[in-house]
Length: 161
Image (cartoon, rainbow, N blue to C red):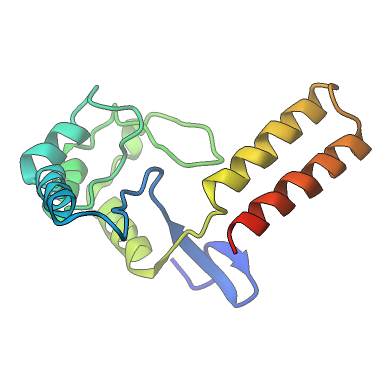
C-alpha cells in the first residue's frame, strides 16, 4: 500500500474509521448512572461479549471488534466462505483469494493510519434525509426543499447556541 491510497482530501489521501452507534454518558449524569455506564461498558468490551457479538448470526451490523484479541480471532476465522464488507462496493465471497497474512497486514496498516470519521450530527442527517426523500419522490419542488432545509437547518443551528 502507498500513501496515495485512500479517500482524497485537501491534505492528500486519508483513511477513515467510524462506529455507527457511539455510546455516551451525559455530562450531568449522577454518580450512580456513571457507575452503571461504566459497568455496562466493562461488560460490553469484555472478551466474552465481544466474541458473542462477532459470532456468526449475532448481528449483521457488527463488523470488527475493538479488542485486538477478538479482532485476531476474526482474522483467524476467515476462510473461502467469508464475505467482504466494503462500503460503496458490492459484497463478495473471498473464495480462493483468502490470504490471512496479507489481509492482517493490510488491515493493521489501514487501522494505524485511519482517522476518526466525522459525520454531521444525526439530527442534521435526519433532516437532510427526510427532505431529500420528499424531493426525490416528487412530493416537494426544488424551491420547497430549499426553503424547508433553510428553515429546519437554521432552527437546528439556533437551538445549538
